[in-house]
Image (cartoon, rainbow, N blue to C red; front, side, top):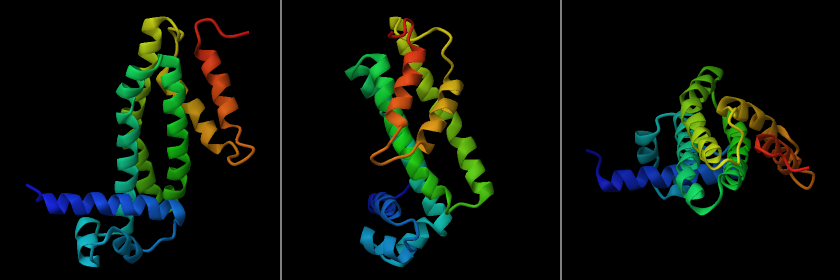
Length: 180
């Protein structure tokens, strides 16, 4: 059993690394330790390599995104929940792209394979809610939707961010009765 202070240290390290990597993908392990308020020994006990730390940040982000689905469906209609969730997914995919640069190709492939199932399950939950209330086409496929969203994170961000417009087109295609 892990002590509560050890769990808290791990959570602080992952949070500090997420912030640090978002600001500068080249942040050193020592800078992460300083930011988390832990010693280097504590950092390396939890994450023996930079790659292990990057993976932990990525896993944490995926879990956070997947965990938002029930709350979104409780707060809004399925199509709007899907829009909100996908916007968060696109932001995470953009961040992941930077994290991916710190991973070996083999590790990058492994993390993609590990997270594919849970992400598709979250999309399935959102699509099924829309199919049930009649707002989303019955033939909407979660794998297809995930592939389409892959184009969104590659769309130019900043003042000319095309992702929201592209997402609106994708969502219109999912509607049982597309807007004209």
